[in-house]
Length: 260
Image 1 (tube, helix red, strand yellow):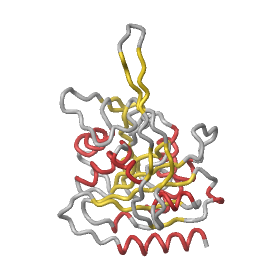
Image 2: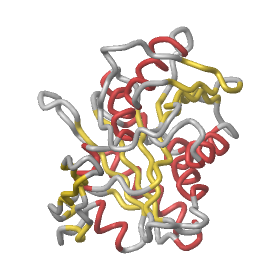
Image 3: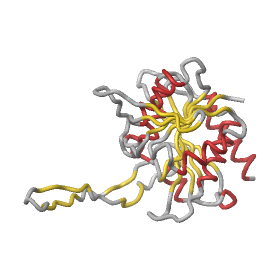
Image 4: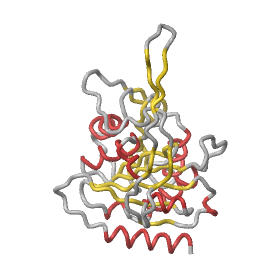
């Protein structure tokens, strides 16, 4: 039984993190430290100009007023200071974290902060086909995250790296499998809406929309478009030497075991 620290960027009360906690605590000891409000697309922001507040909403479930990376750091350095987690798992994010989106993502930011402190980290996201999804299949993403942990894949990570898991919003019986992938690229428009408020002052909305992925094989974007979950390693420090070959073999073995 491992001790797992969970965080996210959708907030401590989000359905994705509740689903992840429910699944992982079947086999592991789980501590949650997550933002008290939604902090999506905040990247790797840290709060250095004001104090952070913590509140324990139920046993081992903490809300923090900071950003996702704050939550990961305060989880490691305070909440779990005397009971260090074996790994950090973040999510389940409401929406994709594919391609260059990982640089905007608070879900990835929380996992990255853990990796900087030499704690194995897995970021988990559920990829919707539509903006409005009445019954998201968070259980599918939680189950595949549990399989990755069970298979010991996180222990194969080199220092200063993380795994990024994206899962189609489908019942697990309809997911085609799991692919080891590289980071792809997603095309967005550059549309900006300029408007004027009631006092005659201009304001702006970033209104760019998703135009589709770059047509490159073996990427996270391609895997999701084809109905597969993707596992993508992400190196964080340029001077580090990354050999992900064992992870590739482990992911292929996991796919064969669970989807053959």
